[in-house]
Length: 224
Image (cartoon, rainbow, N blue to C red; front, top):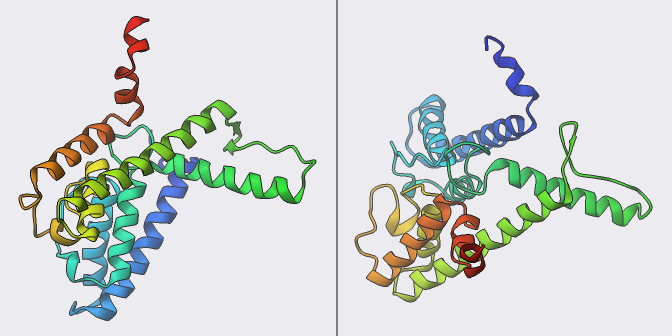
């Protein structure tokens, strides 16, 4: 309280802040060079709102980013994947998980180069337990599997591939608007019933963070 700069000492907050700022700058430049915004300030204003809305999984939109360059739309999809920070009510993979997975990948590469070294993944000064890393890796695999399976199911109903996987990503992250025919000026009404049920299932799993739903569906959980 009264010391906001202490937030910068949190590794996840720094990771979140840097990633968000970099994405905002890249999209601002690409949008300004390819659209009819009158100034770089106007481009940044619209860009920053869309990025903040999507990365926090709020789902509001003040611009039709369907007309933005492909690189801007791709980065917005990446924001949907990232989501917010751990402990928040936002959806997505969460920055903490992504950061720890990147640290784990770095440690594995370092171990190959220096096989006798003893290295552990750390969050700040705290050593992350191997069990925690296994949980994160398992969640990551399940999250990607759910994304791919749902995208394939929706595309099998006749929806184009881009819109299908964008809808899958948006629903797992509980964001709302996606890309393509489910963009900010469109809706999900045209998706066939089977596709809607698949997306509903994704919303449920995404909101409850996958593990919760899987655990309550296992018979052993109820026997215990």
